[in-house]
Image (cartoon, rainbow over the protein chains, first blue to last red):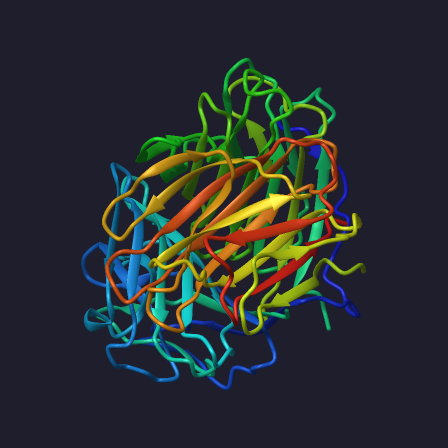
Length: 188
Length: 172
Length: 165
């Protein structure tokens, strides 16, 4: 038996000043979704954060990569770098833009029927700064009770345009119902 | 503007207990972020901190971790745990005054359809058994989380001045 | 309801660069501090270390790193975020770092959590998970950031305060 803290001191309320704001949320409905998009992202924040809960749908079981594309750019304009713990060893990989048409933010479980969802917290600093290419940093993973991995992923989108659209593009698998991607803005 | 990032509860240890549980967690947030800053009283270089969800002490927890100890990197996996390992903090044998930090994200904690996955970062710089790690853990229950406990694994209290706070993050 | 996650201050490096980014006179009214850094070093290499000092004095740290091919881990006699992008990395590319300092105004030694990455259009970069320690019981009133060389123009850092009640 744990010692119990009596009382909860706060509840969500109105009228506060905060630098951390929710912009939009996508929850995948029945039937799943091949892709997810956030459009018309306001340029009034300094940083963006995505908080992800996801599972893919497939007939087998394993792990599939989730990636991001910005402003509908599907060209070879992204790098990918991964620091990986797979439960038995640590490793790192990297590749330049010639190899990548999206930014990698982690690998999520795919399965025809399971309640196991992976998570990621993704930070995109200075997303609207037109003097910079856009660096993506993501910490996340999936534990599948005997398999899984945890990763620090990073990418750069070699474009100085302000990010106004974020797309999780269609992949080999569909996102499953109850997957949720929430977009937050931080003022700076 | 309604608050997106809200403190739900906080606890400061007085040195006489090894654990604390937050109960009656409202379901109105999307994610819970927990920040623990502390030191264990057990006579070891490090102490493992575990989380217990919904007062569930059965072997329904598992984890995959990535760790660096200041000289080499490693990864490990465990299944059949009776708690969710979050990371390590200094123990009594660590350099005097040293505290460690664990930051844990319990994503979509209040849904009743998925198993619950937590993502944590552990930070312990004790020279003998230092560790920086990232861990993803699984609680195999679809129940909404209404109770979150934090405890040392095995033995020993948390020293006076150790703190743990849970915040709610609310999406649109 | 008090402000919970609030910007305290921000710095944008102008033309000519900056030898340091300093947040001073930090109020003690928050519980934790978060610093988000989008930075590039002027050092003539592809990466430059982010050095963190509190109240003008350094600490220690251990890091787990990914280099695009290897996974070294190291201990340092300073608080090092490994790394930011630097002068010979792809133009316009900036590293990304998060620094979390809980209980910064408390009377215990200060523990830090850092996640950092440089970036480059190449295989090799530095990503890191870092545990830092500032062995001082004083309240943190300043956060001092430096890098190899200087911070390049357009580098930014934002300091946030998080309040636990």
